[in-house]
Structure formats: structure tokens, C-alpha cells
Image 1 (cartoon, rainbow, N blue to C red):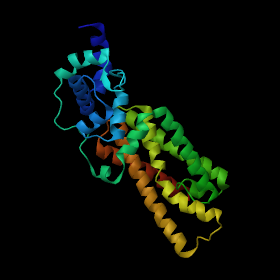
Image 2 (image 1 turned 180 degrees about the vertical axis):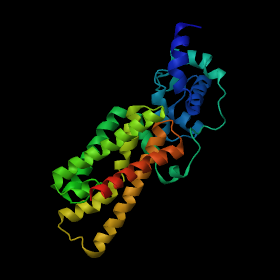
Image 3 (image 1 turned 45 degrees about the vertical axis):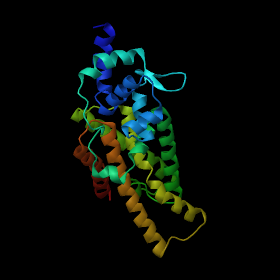
Image 4 (image 1 turned 120 degrees about the vertical axis):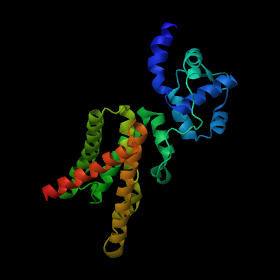
Length: 272
């Protein structure tokens, strides 16, 4: 066995190839010689976001020819010959058995953000800043922590940002204690995608605020219901993000995300 096979093939690429979808992609490319993005997607019944995400993980093992088709790189040929052919590829191409959260969230949204982590972290942090600002100026509360403060838009905006980074830090420490494998950028993205559902609440709230429309009576009640739904959905997004960005078990991702909400409200009860 060459030094490449011993050092890279056995260590670096085994983790990448532990995913059955990636094994099937490499097998398909090896069988076809070269194949288009669309053909891979149709053959393996994948979405654009999912395939894009997996192809990003196989960057060193695949390359494009003159027609922009995918083919095996030199490293990819060695990996297919020395590793893939020795691994039994499951019949299903599913990474994890579908669970109830997959039906009410959008896995492709996560794949889209995972596909380019550096870009996604910039975008999600910008969304966090916008979200914190909108909650601040509209005198709404982003979390139970800031609801006990009356420092105005700037203070509440800063608390909103700290709140989400505190969530990320607690999850990070918890996974370290549990010795769960993960990539920090993907975990960061997976947690911060939980910001997105709040915009369903912020859009009508922002419009009402800037048009000086009163939110008394039934409008206020409707907005409160929308906010509660968005907060629940945000928690569900965080659960999905933790599950997709780590090797944690599904019930553990649920417990971890829910524990953040519990910690949040315990703090509120102690402080009030």
C-alpha cells in the first residue's frame, strides 16, 4: 500500500466515506467515467441542496472535465480501489432514517448553508444582527433573558446577540462532555439557522411598528400567537441543526435543544 493509501485513505477519507450517499456518488462516477450533476441527482434521487453538500465533501476525490462533468481525481481513483470496493454500501441512500422533524423543517435549507460554511456564517450573523435590531426597535423580546431588562433597543439588541452565542457555547460544551464528533462551523450554522423562523413574526411586526399601527386588542393577540409558533419552530430548527451537524443521536439533539429553553426560563424565574 502506498503512503497516500496508508495515511490519507485510511484516516482522512474514512470519515468522509462513512456516509453511504458519498460512497454511492463515488461508485456512480467510477462506473460512468464522467457524469453530470443532474444525472447524479436523478440516479440517486437527491435534491440539489443535498447533492451540492455531499459533492463539497468529496472535493479532493472528484474533479470536473471539459464538459463540467464529474470524474474521479487521482486520489479518488485510489480511494475507490482501496476503500470503497471493500465497504458494503447499504441499499438505502438515506443518511439517517427520516424522523418527524424532517417533515416539518426544510433539510435542504441546512444543506444549502452547509455547502459554503464561510459564506453562510457571514449571512447568518448578518441575519442575527438584523433580527436583534428589529426586535429591539419594535420593543419585542427575542428571549426571556432580555424581557427582564428595560435598556432600550440597543441593549436588548446586544442581549439578543449574546443570547444566541450563549446557546452555541452551551451546546459546544455539552458535546465536548458527551464526546460527540462534529465540525464546529457546521454546528455554528446548524444552531444559527434557528434564527430564520423569527422573520415570520418580524415582518408584520416591523410593518406595524413603522406605520405606527396600534397593536392593542386582537392584533396584539395574533402577534403573540405568531411569536409563540415562531419560537417553537426556532427550537425545532435548532434540534434539526444539531442533529444534522453532529453524530449525536436524535433524542439527544431534542433533549439538548430543549434544555436551552429550560435554562432560559429557570434564569427568568430566579431573576424576577
